[in-house]
Length: 210
Image 1 (cartoon, one colour):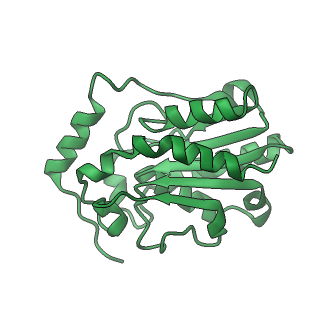
Image 2: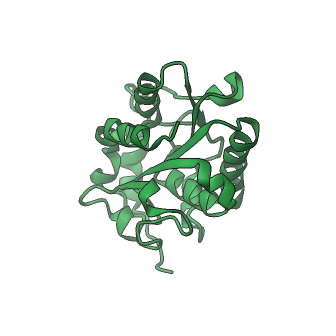
């Protein structure tokens, strides 16, 4: 496996972006607090992002809420999202991956008619990718769509999730985002996926099989 590189200078830029006063702490526990809906999305934020859905989750959530009024829930994955875990072979730590897998399975088991969506940004994409890969075929069948932004395992997995249908996955990789090319070099292109979230949410909505 290609060794992953993280530039400390751009890590500082990422930290500055996270600390921006324009970014508020964002948390979504719609499923944990409100139970089943017709559509439930499990989302994992990127490294060092605040809350449990970070910078990209809020617009995904609001757009999907508008498409499925009173019938949508977003659940953020509670995991540390530390920078060091990016260097692990799976792109995150085993506990984070197990947490995401367990949450998807909980939705599947507790909500027998719900359609399930998933997504992640940066390290969060690795968390969700590994979690989905480990799901049973029955759970995968109810997982209608997955979106990734700045997919850290994009090169290694050939733009896919192993064992998951490619037509149910949408990967957003900006031109110049070197994370998508098998490194952990953070460029400005890795920090602008907010421009893609509405498009991604509409794509997810189009995949839901209610």
